[in-house]
Image (cartoon, rainbow, N blue to C red; front, top):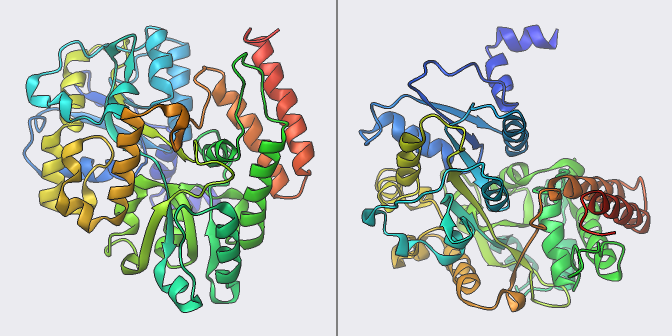
Length: 438
């Protein structure tokens, strides 16, 4: 019945696409591009379809899907050596792993017009393996705290800098008004290494913890992890929105834009949408500051980038690389700015993006740019930017396993101590089977 209802409304195709079920490319001459459903990508596709560009005559088969689905699709293709994609968008976790395995075509000749020196150092380094460039950055981000200035003002509250999780808890508690459909805070809770564990990882960092030590021994069942996970659960479990146990960044972004969250800790790249009056009902009342800290500042924010790469299996590598160069160019960003406004600019990758007009229009921009520059030029061991993953192929499985345990603790199926004990055991088993530890 449900299937027929979807079919009658013409929604079957959209549901299938969400789960990566696309029809075969229309012809052998088309370029197949696999991308996650992230802020920015739909506007770029819209621009390509409605404006004259160097690629107007090129048939591009865009395959847009949930990022978790995309990862599974790409991993499946690689496992059986299928050439389903000519150009793919990978995270900075994936690029060096794919490059090491010989699964990506290198960008050997980047034209002078691309202005590689304009690319922010952290975004460039993330796509380099053994001094060779294997991908080009589309967007990059760190973590920020978004908050409702009007709610704080009415409650007589002020944001401290740096903001601690202890201070955040007190304010969230005071501003939580479920009877008015205003909830204290939104945090990622959907299970996944790039969902709930992305935020949890930097919370662990700032409470002095880590995923593994220098000998690759898991460090999950520790006091630092317990404090971070307990803080996360106290915040979200007590002051989160309905269905707070299964919300990704997109759902939280929508809730904040609808005026239903007082605080939202997530990616800086969401600022363009949250601060845009066309997409956010609270745009004029949004305040921004750095991500909260625990007991130390080190590692309290993540670095993430989405990057275009060409699979080694593609039969149209040259055309795919030319498209990647244009999709990550200053020229495209300038065109987006001119046609759709400052909120449409793709953030995090180029110095030229952060001119005075952009930083004035987008309050999150100055925080984002400052953090990304610091990561590019300072000792990262002392940086506010920390890794939210272990750079090994097995981390996707590890992150998911630990994410399940954290979610079980959030929903009171197990205690925090039980969750961490199980997560430590599971992670140790994976690391041992992979040969990292004895």
